[in-house]
Image (tube, rainbow, N blue to C red):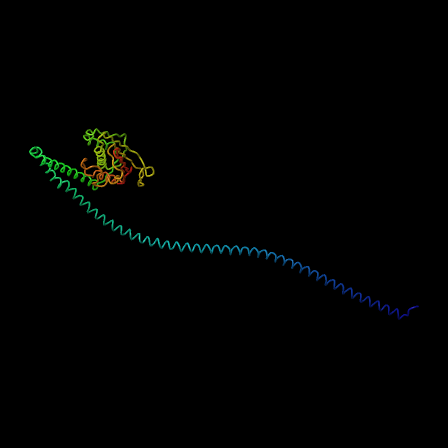
Length: 368
């Protein structure tokens, strides 16, 4: 059946409407596609920004972790410093207390030193007075006491030469005792004078060959040596820094004792030796004054009980029978004083009936 013309017109109109709608739809689709592309591009940009921010957050988190660890470390260090500061403050407080104590002790020490200085000045004044008294005593001993003693001895000699035989036995005994007492007094005065000279004399040290001193002493003791048939043995001796006349007195006193206190059954045999020692290898304790000359005088005499090794140097002390042996007990006191004048030391060791050794230690150099 053939369509009517108006039907053809309706179909064309519908096609035109569909076409227009399709165009509109395509345009709309194209617009939407453009919008979608824009949204996709924006979304891609947003994703990139989000990824960047996430990466930055990760970096910040890592940095924050490092910062936290550093902060933890610093806090630990601060706590250590705080603990150390507490210890340091405690130590500082202790040191301050110690300083205060030292200051107090120093104040006491200064007061004690001031007191000691005052005491020293007093002792010096007393020593000056004592020295003057000693000089007076020396003058009295050498003049006033000697003069009446000489008269006693002179009158005794006259009685001895003129009237001794006319005396009774008892009178002779008393006369002999008087002579012995006068001789003892003369010896005592001489010994006291010798002791006073060791205290008051001027000290002039000289380097002296000890051999020369020994030979001079042996010459002065020649009669005693011959009488006792004594032997004095020495090899090459040291040179010593000494006060010569004092040291001569010292050696004379020691050798006289060695000869006097000999065993009756044997002749005296005396040996003298010299050695160089110091405070490290010395047999006795010595002050740190460098090297010392050790002079050893050994005899084979009576010796003495070791309990008297220090007492024998005290004035008027004797360890042997005063009736059997002449003497005043001053000889070894003079020896000790002379050694002290030389800033030295002296020791005595002995075995009864076998002998005695005196060891003298004198510094090799003296400061006058």
